[in-house]
Length: 209
Image (cartoon, rainbow, N blue to C red; front, side, top):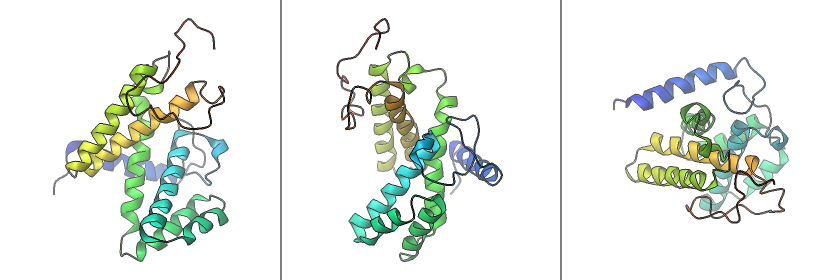
């Protein structure tokens, strides 16, 4: 089946980013530089690393819950979050179902690539990053991307779904890093983020926080 233009562009971008991964060891937030992370240390806190860690954790949770592979949680903790080792754990489990780990890797990288490319694709839309107190529009953007992902899944357009998820995760991550949600003592995710609802008591642009 012939790929749609955006699919082809995403595939080419994935090939390009993989070539960069082989030579660069550090990775900065956004699109300033690329590289293969050596660990899932959350103190690194950039979009690529946070998203990669979340997708690995989600894959392991899925295998635990759906296929009763309860040992994976202990395996994940034992290797202390090393990217290569986590990938090998998942690869081993996928092999049991005759599923190529290449598909998992490409799917993961489609999401992470869309995430870090949000800075370029939606620049200079401040609401995608929850800048300038754009909380209402930021929340609507997240809801829009969630619905786009759901619609794409219903149409079996997997690449479009993964792109929308990547855009959505970027904005969700920015909500917590660009606002004072954590500094206010909140220890749970904001459940209204993807609902298009008001996010609570919000300061305007002229109010010091």
